[in-house]
Length: 363
Ligand code: F6P
View 1 (spheres, rainbow, N blue to C red):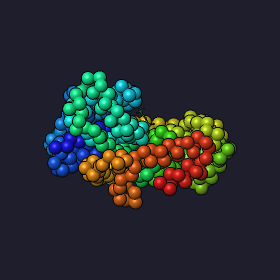
View 2 (view 1 turned 180 degrees about the vertical axis):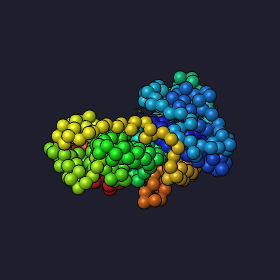
View 3 (view 1 turned 60 degrees about the horizontal axis):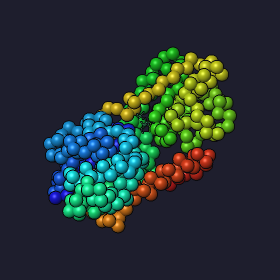
View 4 (view 1 turned 135 degrees about the horizontal axis):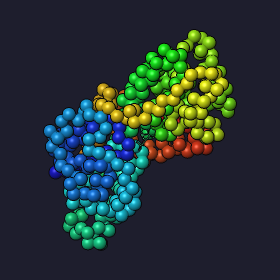
């Protein structure tokens, strides 16, 4: 019987539990044994009880739980080869040769590195007498399958990452709540949202709430951004708006790549327009709470597909990442998806903003 393990890695995202549930149950339904690894790659490096066999009932109730119930971590030791050697040994000891990872691009790249090194790691374990040749013999290849779990929706090659729509929904609810008080006092609110280098959450939240202005890394404001914001906000006020909402992505910057902070925008609205302005940083409330229906559906369908991808894998097929493109669950080459994602960041760093937007749109 094949043994398939799943772990969650990087920042938690709503829907990760749905992915764990789907992978566990689909593995069992496909006649495989199912394992979870606690605390991300940390659990793989530690081994022992951190890698646990799961039964069908163990994931009951997972769909509606927020965060990740099997834990996650940003593991430093797995980034170094000795950590990966230890992880490989623990996997062999548990009889696991297929790993599904639900995480962001960094976590998925780490997994593919493990796969690339795997035959060498097996040889090294034998040379160092950590494992016998007979022990490693059935484990000549490692299957890796990626599921993209992140609220940021920052991965190329997929239309949505697991968690992004829940987070967007939370942001919209928070902005709606803020709007009620802003309207009452005729105030301005400058709201900071998460997303790391990606402006998707900020942009979509701005569209969904009808914000006055939005600042995102992929399309910075004009050189004279202070005038641009003031012109638009005062135009809206002259049209009769009693409130002002400016949404700022955490990675927002000007066209010289200088960060634009919420406090700078707040100061601008106060000093130049005389508005009673407040700052709200939404923080981790954007990441918590139970997943919306879309993320439950996405994580379930993609988890099922991930197990299928493990069962279809051959050594010559590159590791896949499970994506959703035009509403269809599809497999894409993992490393290509990561590279395209990194290309967008590089385009922004090179101040090629239009190229960055096109790159993301094309994918
Ligand atoms: O990647 C998800 C995310 O929430 C980003 O939006 C944010 O930049 C980062 O993680 C925050 O990480 P932490 O919770 O470790 O501070």
